Image (cartoon, rainbow, N blue to C red; front, side):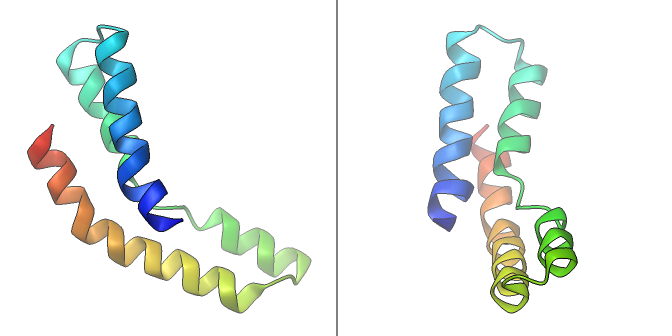
Length: 78
């Protein structure tokens, strides 16, 4: 699932930005936003509703760590 978020979504955003003929700066922003990790809002909702707090916190932390590895690659490729 993380591979989908961290690699497939930026690739799809790049393809869409190319198909839509976006200017280079706008295309870069779209691809970079697609490569960003899941936000903390997921954790906040898990705590608020007291559902799956530990797995959600682990998933958010792992996604952030993996994004630290993949984001430089996305920036370098773009």
